[in-house]
Length: 126
Image (cartoon, rainbow, N blue to C red):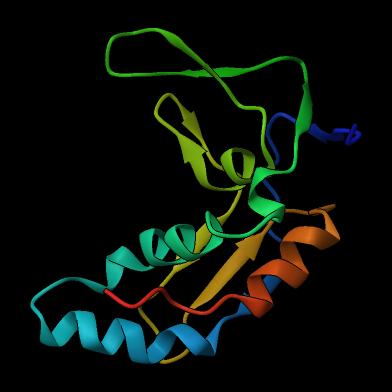
């Protein structure tokens, strides 16, 4: 059985800027197709969902949840949900796709699994 990582429910300081140049070409292709570079977070999340670290269990103190479209509670119980967010729960990272080199601002104390995992991600072909 895998032990859950304990994380703060919210963190607002973003001391680590992590550049992800491997997403630049994917963002350029989106612009050509008429989409926005604002889709950067979605591109990274789609790639991250295919990794093991996204699904690592987390425990938040205090317990927090989001809400689905029907108003039902949705647990924030994985590292991916904590990082990217779900409806009713804003994630703990900011995704900036506008400059030449897109980057992610990560909160203080972000688990190494996230940092290493993001650096290894490759965009999913659309």
